[in-house]
Image 1 (tube, one colour):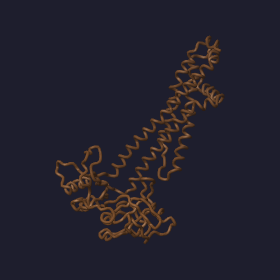
Image 2: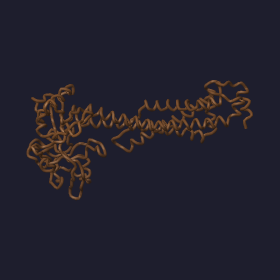
Image 3: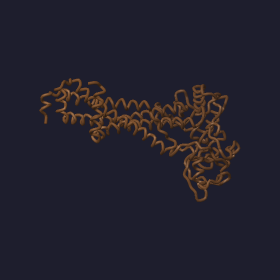
Image 4: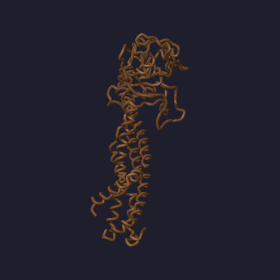
Length: 412
């Protein structure tokens, strides 16, 4: 028999037992749909994380206190970063490959305006924050260097904070808010950055660094220096990244009084390193989810083998009759293998439609996370479903092909 004849017979068999065929394919359908939808969500998370870090600014280095990474030593945190470190990194004679520096210092606080109240992140920073972080106000102005020097109680708010404190949509400029019971005047409204949940970049209030350090969250250490949580350093050119990192490390080691034997009590990251690190984490997570979903394919394969064995038993007389009129062992073998593979491939195609639909449905529930359909995973899942059908159809096909025609004709 030709391949097309086997396919035609297999289709007739599937159409004859529609419900049984669908239930047999169900494991394959669920497996393929799960692989495609989960891998698509994983790829979407990778793209989302990359976009979030790219949205922090251009050509940035991140300086954080303590050691972070595989060489981290337990307990090696040092005394943290200070305003002195910010000034040292911003000195063009000491770090010539950094064009601008801005620190952050803050924590979560309660913001109130009249009867409206919100818990959000309050961050103290410097006047060049909009340029370094590429985060500009769309209404009003950002605070200036004079405000930072004098600790003026002014604030610039994000869009999420604006929507919750000003639900009627009126202009926030000039309005008074209380941050931990300290009055601040709003002078600017930041542009929409996006994000959701714990990563909502619009859920922020920015105030002058000195106001945050001295009025809101006392930051003075025992040695009199003022702490900062994080330092952003903008490179003069991205090709000078390695040189800038070396310069920053040298300067901070001098500022912290570290000897040549001491490990750094700070860490300098680039945007590429952060994106790569998170990409590895999300990649492993995506692979893990794909493997779990792939187990459903194996379960579906077992279901196909079970039904094919039942089919061989039900069609024993048919097999005997075909052999009696001249069908060869290979004809019977091919017929049942094609039928098993067709079951798996039809299930795979239905799973493909379900998986892509699931990815689209997930995207409708989130504006920030958009699943990306991985066509490599799509084609891989379809091919894998065919291989599952082949692998689990071999034994029933061999069993059918090995039947003795006389015994098969006698089977009741």
